Image 1 (tube, rainbow, N blue to C red):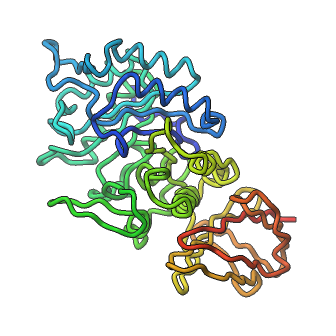
Image 2: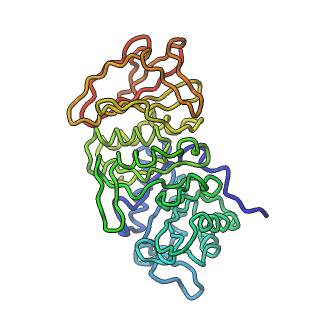
Length: 388
């Protein structure tokens, strides 16, 4: 049987939650159950989020005598199968983490030399998603390593969304389309607007450094239904301002990045919940065309990003990167919006569009008149244009 990836998965960017940003390896059965309950209670499931992914640190420090991975019995006293069943009982999907190298990034057993064995174990537990990292890989070839795990998952027979996480170091946009459903394009995210924090041999990046890191590559034209550029788990609700959280969420949506929450859902504010469950913004991310947005202009630190939508629609975000509010007065006819890569053009001289404010849920008239607004510090105005 010809090995391949599960083609039916991730026709739109995957949505879910991952434990790493907030909890690191401090994870447990109770945490996962609490998160699953909140998915339902807070309307996150209803908004489209479905994967609950346990990142590094779920296993014991050694494999068992048969070479199998073992869920840490102190963190997961009921075992992994029971936990997966609990998540499934809520109508959600379950994800785990491992690594292509000998050990994971936190020093637990990696999958090197155990790919088929691990894939069978995940299938027996009912796992739906595998995040596969790139620590302790020595001389391994990234494309080959991820192909091996892809083939192992396929052979195990259970459809598993394969999330490639080698931080963009091996240009996965050139080879990962047929290997996984999503691939990281950068190193780790951190909860700040513009910063980069060094950790010796690597660094984590805030929202804008991550957005801009691969802008001069052709990653836009590669992504689409079934294969997405992954800008990393979101930091919404992790200590930035509500305005910065809105901008972060708007940008991940317009870039068609997977929307993986990274905060503690059990204690998040009403404002964070409102941002993360905004179905009008999520609909931009989940648009069936699957075309990532592009930067249309960047004048005086007012960023304008545009994204073609189905039915000749457009999403447009105006993000204020200044430390003072900005007055917007945007003439649609003077700024012919278009995308050379996907060959979508707005042609505002020939077409009129309804303008819808997606964060405030209100109609702002049509493109026949200028769009006027005050955009707060690090805040966003995100609109959808629908052809009349």
